[in-house]
Image (cartoon, rainbow, N blue to C red; front, side, top):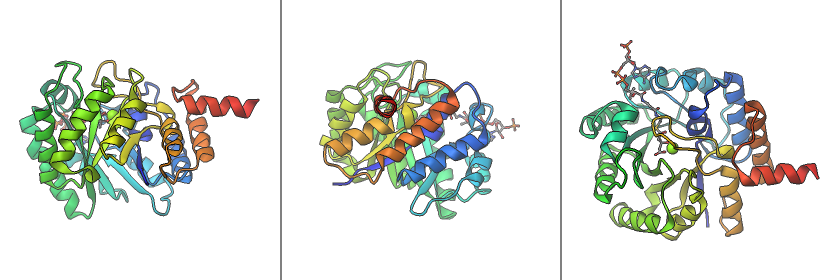
Length: 298
Ligand code: HMG
Ligand code: MG
């Protein structure tokens, strides 16, 4: 049984770091991740650099990495202006994103949900025309920092719109890490009924420590694509209180222990986590990373 891991650390992780990480360090990190066997890497983001200064070097990062064989690199793109910059790179995939809740959508991308649809539809159309495949994200499916509970109907509507635009896959986001397994079962059951498990991904932030329990619930609903971030880096700067994604090291450890194949080499993954931990100069949240470092020191 295989599970695809989408590594989002260089984007979702770094976008929340206050200190700007040097471009060569980002490039090294991405190369480490590919060397560890990760075959889907969200490398950066072509959003407005005024909104996310950390990722202003998206073109330089994409043009600096060594494209690993069999690895698909992706990046966030919010509009046609972002897609223009993508044309300066060799990216194979882009991702569009919006929220299931109105207020988070407004704070994150400065538009109502209704006004976002045509903007993303033109990005998907043009990107597809360029031969890129397009992933979609729905944020705040399990809760919104401004509106609280988000009815499933809103998530179904946005997910459907993203598929209709031409996204090949939609990642379902617990942006602020409030989900619990019961909720994951309920929401994913409804989404899977509507769209099928094979084109849905789970994107869990581990803000309240329920991330891996939510992964198990998603696996039980048939989900086989999971997003995670090296070291557990991350968050959404426009969702107050959001902290890191589930860590890739913890996810891989869990999945391998449950008998799933990921293609990831745990030793090389530790090297990648250690690399970015050293660059950032602080202890990262990943429990497995810290355990592996401690074990290596004994
Ligand atoms: P806006 O300011 O409303 O944009 O931002 P605008 O269209 O009015 O343009 C204003 C200026 O920005 C113009 O320049 C544009 O050219 C420029 P001016 O004419 O004034 O000189 N501009 C750009 N420049 C470079 N690249 C661009 C770009 N776009 C506009 N792409 C916009 C609207 C959507 C662009 C902005 O709100 C934005 O960039 N938001 C992104 C916020 C973000 O990155 N959030 C985090 C990612 S989402 C996330 O983390 C959730 C996820 O992980 C899933 C989950 O956890 O749930 C995916
Ligand atoms: Mg996220």
